[in-house]
Length: 148
Image 1 (cartoon, one colour):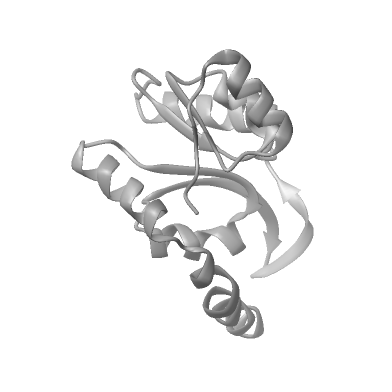
Image 2 (cartoon, rainbow, N blue to C red; image 1 turned 90 degrees about the vertical axis):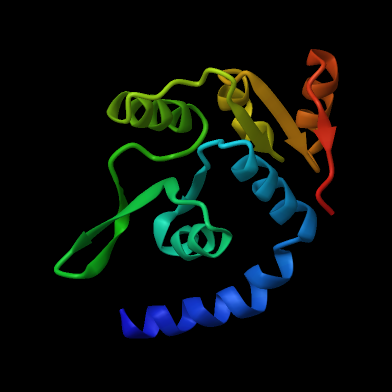
C-alpha cells in the first residue's frame, strides 16, 4: 500500500493537477455558494478518485469499489459497479440512505456512457462532450458547455 500511495501522489501531481481547470473550480464554487450538495459519481475506482474528490473539496464520492482482503486489493470489483445503469442504481441507493432526492439536481458529464444518469436529473449538462452525447444533448435541448 505504501508503494501504491507513492505512485498515486505522483499521479496526482503529474496528471491530475494539470487537468483541474479554473472554470471547473469556479463551477464547484458556484454550486457551493448556492448551497448545493456536491457529489462525484464515477466509474473509476475509489483508490484513484478518492484523492481527486478530496482535492476538489467534494465530500461525497460514489465510485467503483475494489475488493480488498487483509489490506490488499484482490483485482475484482466489490458491490455494484459504478458505470452506466450501475451509476443510476448506486445513486438511488445513496439517495435512499441519505433521505435525499434529485429535485432540482444537476449532473455534468462528457460521455455517452452517462446518458442513463443524465436522464434522471433535473438539469443534465453536457461538458466538452463526446460526439454521441453532443448530438443527444442538442436533440434534447440540454446545455452544452466547455470548461476548457
